[in-house]
Picture 1 (cartoon, rainbow, N blue to C red):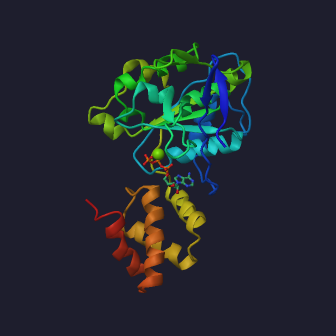
Picture 2 (spheres, rainbow, N blue to C red):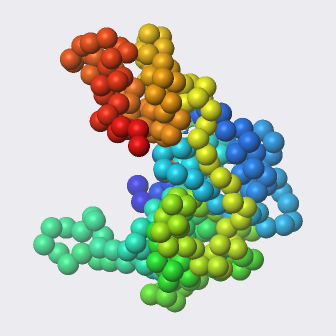
Picture 3 (cartoon, protein in one colour):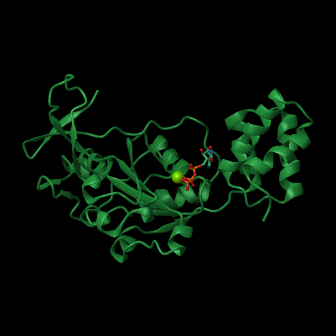
Length: 286
Ligand SMILES: Nc1ncnc2c1ncn2[C@@H]1O[C@H](COP(=O)(O)OP(=O)(O)OP(=O)(O)O)[C@@H](O)[C@H]1O
Ligand SMILES: [Mg+2]
């Protein structure tokens, strides 16, 4: 059910928080600690510490598939707070971060659909005091990021140019709870997609997400796909023999998934199966 609220006497539909995956989270103790310190979260990760200073808007940086989203999901799960995600892309506009006018999906067939104002995930998180994660923020054109400036400092509002409304936290409690973080893949930045300086300075500290140790990759593959011990052993052998420390966690999970299906449908020795299917998942070593 869509939730509607009144903002400056205007009816606005709120965005929905994401449904957090329930797969077990593995490792990343240091990274989690750094994020929690930035956000003012208790050591056990379950509550926000009531401080007088503004929390920091940390920025996760790292190559694809290493677990940036998973870290944010884990923080939200432990806090038991709603998480709203803005997915960055090249066509994003400033209004996508504030309020959007959309046709009402419940309009009757044939009638001119009434229009509904919809709050973005960012505006919704800000209004109700939730967590906001801006993913792939460096893919977004500079001008679309401009509404963020006032969100990320003491002003704490997002301006909707289309309606002239400033969306603010609905009360002091919401203002205290609101948290923002973002993620980017630095290889895009190397290709010239850099963040504007004023966003760069408002999204600190930078927390680098690198390859986790093999034991963690092993544990993630084990808990997410529950392969047999023989399959896990064959995966471990393949990983060490081929020296594939370059593969991401996502690729490791996909590799095991495909290898298990391949054996079931086509058959073959487990060791050979990895050698065979790896070329379709992670390519040959460059
Ligand atoms: N710490 C972890 N615990 C459990 N699973 C993990 C963990 N890290 C990564 N994974 C697994 O790896 C997959 C990829 O992780 P995630 O989507 O968080 O990566 P990402 O860094 O956000 O990638 P991209 O840059 O492509 O968005 C997840 O779907 C999950 O299966
Ligand atoms: Mg991601």
